[in-house]
Length: 477
Image (cartoon, rainbow, N blue to C red; front, side):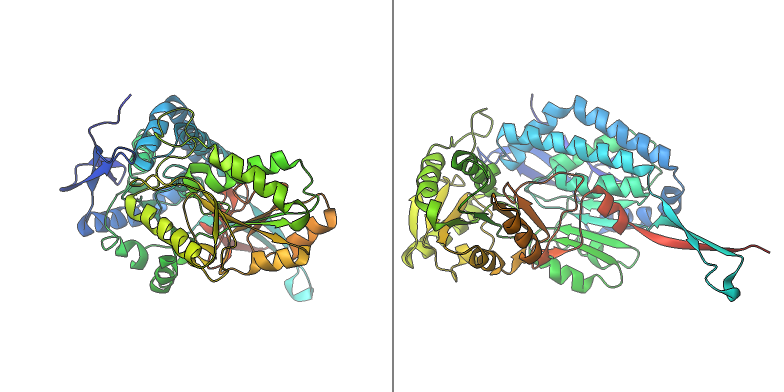
């Protein structure tokens, strides 16, 4: 199975051949894999106009019809699952097993949204609180906010799109989506499936374009909500967004604590840490980057981690056994390599690693990384993690909090009081006890604090952001 030779953009529900095209590279071979339409300012403007006009038709599109659209997507994504996985493997360099896992999550997310589409309710209010208000009755319902703009990154080209698109359909919001230019194919296949449905005209547009042309998606006052997943540039977007609602997920440098009693065997802990740190070459906002292990088990854990990291199969992502594939491009690999080199020059020690070849970077594990090093302070977004010892659990919590980011954190502990203390004190959007911070289920709230962003995704929480409360008061005579 191969990708198509080219993919059109989607403007107001219909495929359109753009004047410009964009080559999409196979991230392992570096060769052109396909070509997609590439929008310009005029096309983005047309998409915004069409979406703005579709507000009423989407708002009045019945909940059961929204559910039917989402269920159609579930069926079609299931039928085309191997095609979608192949697209991920090629355009993102994602190992094929991981790609199939992301397709499964895409399907899950649309299935969850289908269920939520007919459960967007309200509340009955008792307004007779005194003599003046006797005979008044109140009730609320949630109504769609209107046109939404979505901007998504390269690392989860299917599921991060799904977490914006599926809730928007469930909520009754038209949208314009700009997928990442490095990985646009998955989003265009999703658009192809949406075009098979009865969504009102103008309900959606999917247009790869430059960041400059995407400025309208941030600044246009006709857009009611901007949802962006990506880097710290999101804060600049928020400043330019005007009065619209803004949801940002801007990454992290996630930490995981391994207590003296981790509540599981060290072999299990190592298995989960390796998954969390190196899954899809560490290109996840909740990839394990910092590991804090109690000194009582530090040496044993370090030894087991070293052996496990060294044994990870690296290479062609299309090969079933591959665990570490390429990072998104060579500049990204060089940046990560330079951060590792800088940390080593300042006293860090490489426990496991290897030489970079192009955009292939072997899994790295380091210790003694200075706390002011870029590798420690910033988001590595690659196959690298660091480990250090702690003596006191409260000190470990403080180390986790010593970060500009706060998306999720993991805690392996057999002590309930330590688990609850972590939940109380960790400055993150989610605390995962008994597993790594990389754990996510698509019906849970997901988002962060500090530089990690504002707002929450997860289907029900996204629907809440994409709707607003409307009150009805009736006076009974």
